[in-house]
Image 1 (tube, rainbow, N blue to C red):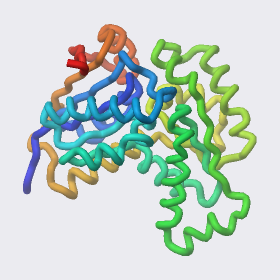
Image 2: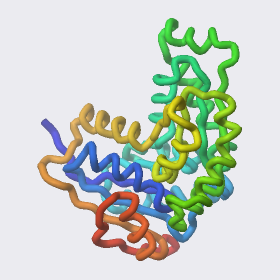
Image 3: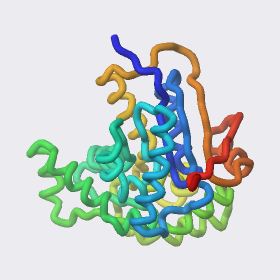
Image 4: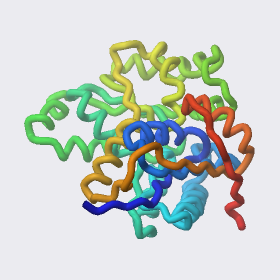
Amino acid sequence: MKYNNSPIGIFDSGLGGLTVFKEIRKILPDEDLIYFGDTARVPYGNKSKDTILRYSAEISKFLTGKGVKIIIVACNTSSSLALEDLQKEEKIPVFGVIEPGAKRAVEVSCGGNIAVIGTSATIKSRTYSRVIYEEIESLSEHEKGKFKNNFNFKIIEKPCPLLVPLVEEGFLNDEITKGVIAYYLDSVVKEKPSCLVLGCTHYPILKDLISEVIGKDIQMIDSGIETAKTIKCFLEENTILKDGTGMGNESFFVTDDPEKFKGLGEKFLGRAIKNVAVINLSL
């Protein structure tokens, strides 16, 4: 059996991608992981496409320079706007977080409405709608019929621009955050979706508050969990898993304020982060 002991690269605009990192670590404990958080330029959700393309390309170049075997764009905004460009430019596989989440939403919805929340840039791109419809079209005629026979079927996409700044500032379990979530999601709940896709990797850290607002009848889809499953299957199918057992090595890089990243990041992961290095991408 072939192996590949090179690390996996994961990047996000800030802290949110740690929710993907956490799921990757759970399902692939042996792998070496490199995480990059662009904390000096967070959030990405209110920036132009050209800016997001440039930022994503800079980080991707940094990670390939570290010898990673694959890159996970653990940012829905970058996944929606920059993924195709990165896949064309890089010689190694590059994965986003949108397709796995969209695929799971189609699987569990049984023809019911699907809701997606994300940053303004992600929602404006309509990438989730496009990928969800592509997933529906790939179904068998019987399964596809569940959607086509529901003439009222729709995809509800809702931008929630304040949630990323609240998470990045550490308002993880506060009444102000719950109030903002309710402000955004009350109208979504009225549409009676079968499931809600957390279309930003920052949002899983707010799962409990989101659950209080949407109730138990709407199933939450965490794209980080679905992405981790996709990555494991890819590594196994292509025989590029790491050769060895035991906890893999971890490296963390940010563009600003490593102490803040470390403090909040430990809340995301539920454990200590040993070292965080600061990188100036303009160099």
